[in-house]
Length: 222
Ligand SMILES: [Zn+2]
Image (cartoon, rainbow, N blue to C red):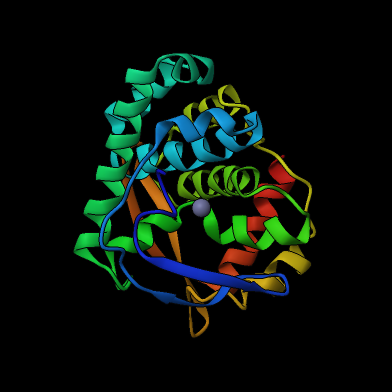
């Protein structure tokens, strides 16, 4: 409801490579039936909140503050708050997609946490939310390393609050091999989504060998 229904992307995985083949085609309209959410197990709510936290981190500092104050069980109980939250997220993603349907600029921001996230999701059989949660933490740490971001702790605390993991052991060589196949790669560099501050995502081109070093230093920092 807050993510894949918006934007028109229809992709399939090829082996461990996520969404390598697909089309972009916009729907005529979107219909949300909130009662469907009652049928979801808690893990799927948590997966959805990973994308909600992502939207707040890249685009909406006020939403991030609301998420820090609230919690999952409150949204599960309060239909009005949930409907408002979903509408707000639909508005964030729609605005980004309307500006840049085919991902030449602004839409890249939606990949926050997804570069490393996609690499570890299939390798380690994580759920999508778990994988991008770990990816967002790594992207925050790289953002601190490259400056001027200083709020990794807030992002980690919020992800934890919504039941998402923030640390993982992974083999950098294996992960880098998958990253080299990523469709966001441009020659020997990668378009990586970082944060300048909470609510302000930016795309930076990072050379693959530098990214290799950054990931190594993040893993040893753990
Ligand atoms: Zn995602």
